[in-house]
Amino acid sequence: MWINLMFDCLLVVLILVLATGALFSTNVFTGIVLFISLGLAVTIAWIRLNAIDVAIAEVTIGAGLTGALFLGAWKRLEIKKRLQNSINITETKND
Amino acid sequence: MQAELYSVCGVILFALGLIAFLVKSGVFHKVLALNVMGIGVFMLLLATSAFYPNAIDPLTHGMVLTGIVVAVAGSALALNLATQIDLPLQSDEMK
Amino acid sequence: MINAHDSTSLKNRYVFIIIMAISMLAGCVIYALLQTPAPQNIMYDLVQANIQQSGVTNPVTAILLNFRAYDTLLEFAVFFCVSIASLPYLDAGVSDSSDLETQDAPLFSLVKVLAPLTILLAGYMLWVGSFKPGGAFQAGALLAGCGLLLTLSNVGVTRMNGFWWRSIFSMSLIFFILVIGFSYLHSHTFLMYPTTLSGRLILFVEFAATFSIAATLYLCYLSVRGKVSQGAHRAS
Image (spheres, rainbow over the protein chains, first blue to last red):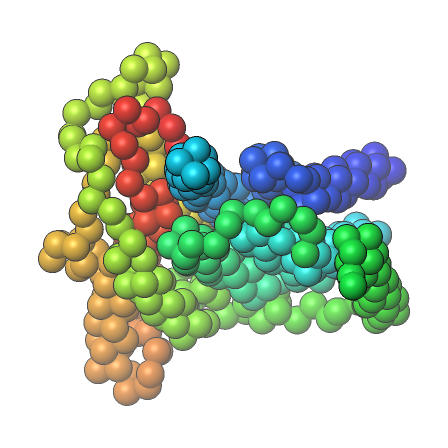
């Protein structure tokens, strides 16, 4: 009985640490990767709470698809930022 | 004991997400914080049906399933808008 | 004259106030949560008493598609609106090929094995939702994941404006409305399925919903990803 409780406590600590890392990291890419890991840890929490349908949906949609969505948007904004930086550098060079 | 633990974890996740939403700047941090707030609310909802582990509450499970899918769609729309407008990706200072 | 030190300390003060306020809010909510008595457990018994009339055995599927079918109808409408809102952002990319060309050999062999398996698994997940955990949402998400895998290895769709794509987006709503009309003819009540046919009607609606959900989630990913130049097809 106590091992169930210990596993639940450890899982809750893992979820809170991952959430803090994902939200308060300075690097956006680190935050996105930790968010995908948070989705996987939360899936185990759903299984512990006897919600199997929710767990299947969370692991495909929440962790997989949201992670891919964020990574695609991050890549696109990185390309835009790099273009802007190169335009700024060429403008200051021309001055 | 398990249900109270997960419901407290859900509230803490929601609070962490809300703090990150208000404090951090930059569009990725805000969308990540909204998603973490959603995960906290789902954990709180599912923990109320864990008081009776043999008799799950299928209405709550259905609501959380709908919520996960709608949250993904909302995040996709938010990221669509974010990649189209020309604001900087991350401002240089906090707030 | 405000120098940098003043503005930084003002910001720090705001951050401190926000953290204090939200911590107090969380503390009050936790205190209220731990004081309330355990919720009464009537929903499981109610559902189990009426589950024979719903045509499926899985209580979550019965609730989503029979007892609370109106909520699911509105959710399909929300998905339809999301697909309409995401369609204009779809860039006609450079890579419009249908050949599986990628320079990563592990990815190549993985996709050749995984893509048909994922489609098979999605079909299984749709069918097993009647009596075990599963259902339309999970199957649709699996199909969207398969589409994502194919996009990452240079096979993918770039134009979803045609007639057939739009009919896939609206398939779930159309089939659901047909089922509603058919059951109205039977029982003259909105959303009351005939009892002998309710299992088959639920499977019919779930079949349409799988394709709709898969197409909408895939469209969401493609519209966020945008145009990928030809040399960078290895990127996300």
